[in-house]
Image 1 (spheres, rainbow, N blue to C red):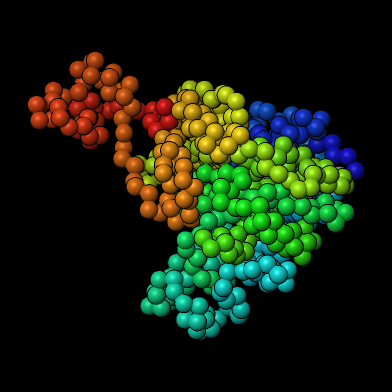
Image 2 (cartoon, one colour; image 1 turned 120 degrees about the horizontal axis):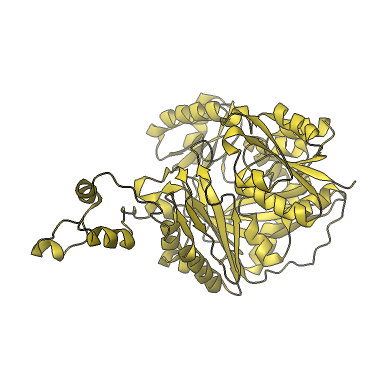
Length: 497
């Protein structure tokens, strides 16, 4: 069948990115949005749009009934879930299928199978994919305590459903186990509606390596290189790259083969990602499978020339995969996630109106954004503003291009993590490819800084206190002293320059 119009059941930059491919394919675009997003960029760019509820996600972007009804009203014949929200909700996929809508993702059965981490581990074992040593049997506290002792410490207590670090607790000793188990159960129950948990050995040091897969409806499944996503903060990825700087051709073939075996085991169709932990000695362990398009899919596109969203559409229309064998990376790509957050204040999410926005340009630079000048960033949703990607012939060229792009980015009105991203990319840790999943846990805390332009302006107007001879040898006044001197004052755009 030929898809004529797609409803994108998501918001922000991923909605804009999906629309870009659909327009290039001559396919109509439709979106749903909350009242908080009436003037958002993704709504303005869509051909058709329908408001489906107030700002709380559970009353809009997480309301499957409203989304399916909107798809019919907007005359869409397919739904793309993006990532987050309902993208890995098997019931939503089944609702779309029952309503006669093409779901641009895997079958609901595959989503359900991989959404249960306990079941996913067992499927991986059946597919001869190595899993992290642990326990995924009956969910009984006494049995879990006994198995915890067998596994040894440190270890992880993990929610059997969901992700994003919720219901995940590190346990350093037997004395900590009972309280960690109770805490993980509470978080898992609140976030995912199930308090079931499993246990895994805590693998450290380790890299986070994931393999992109594509599978068509004719039995063909292919691994599309790997990405490294080791730089994570609170279990959320910050910087991603393709390919990994430490994965050899031999290891790439082993990882890809394992990912393909698991995808076939579950009857997978469409785009998906199999995630692994890679130890320094080359051993790798299955983590989970993300049954959707990943945030970081763009780095894979830059080094392969493939459009993964376009392939999701083609596969849904029944087209067979036509990909080169083997797939060889063409250069290197790195992505940084730009958030409205303040790294100097424990990464506190920021709100406000974007008063000025100038996007960087240059060879190899790609911007996947969901915001525009004049748009207000609200507290209702994830604070990611855009993804900045850079591609080069080598990893170093891609790194330098990404740093330059971050320096050239101009955004005023909301504080971002731009300076933090540049600091990471310029660090010995990143340039030396010595990135592990714990690297950012040990990263020095950023201190609040005042843009040089603001200091110069204040000095010109005599707002800065007259420095003593001793103070002249020191740094600029601290933030509290400066604000006491100037009085009410707001710095916009701090951390981005």
